View 1 (cartoon, rainbow, N blue to C red):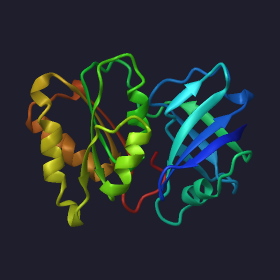
View 2 (cartoon, rainbow, N blue to C red):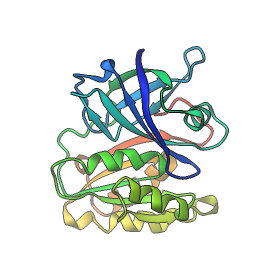
View 3 (cartoon, one colour):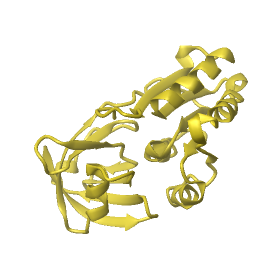
View 4 (cartoon, rainbow, N blue to C red):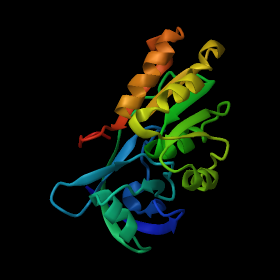
Length: 221
């Protein structure tokens, strides 16, 4: 673990915080889009994983988007942050390998994928089409606008994942364009969209997947 200081924290909405970390330990780091860092929650070995939106290696500064969901260690950490606070982090480390992926890109995910999508938009490539399932469209819209994803396509979650058929159709509609697909977020949703893409003729060479979470499970990142 290495130290960092909270340079800025902004409450973008009730459940989202933009967090800028700075410090010498963040300088001269070989970070690439899709990699993760793990931040200690201050209790034993407990840590939570975040995908940086950006990383300034000269200034030693990185930006995170923290999603606070439920009464969990990560939510309590992000909700209590103040400018000047310190934390300990580990990484960056590989999480989602985007090497070899080609434009045009279509990213599917949820609230846990917002930061990755924003980071992808920083690459020198054609704009990425972004399709999200979210719990609250009214809250997510302004958050995405704040991080440069105002054109994201949003679908509200429904009971028993009844919305996933429509979401999968939205993603699979790009199958014939030659696009590459990045599937992230909730594990069962990824599996549903993956099946739709395969049925539409998309091979594994055009897909990258990373489950950030699954109902009832811990330890995913």
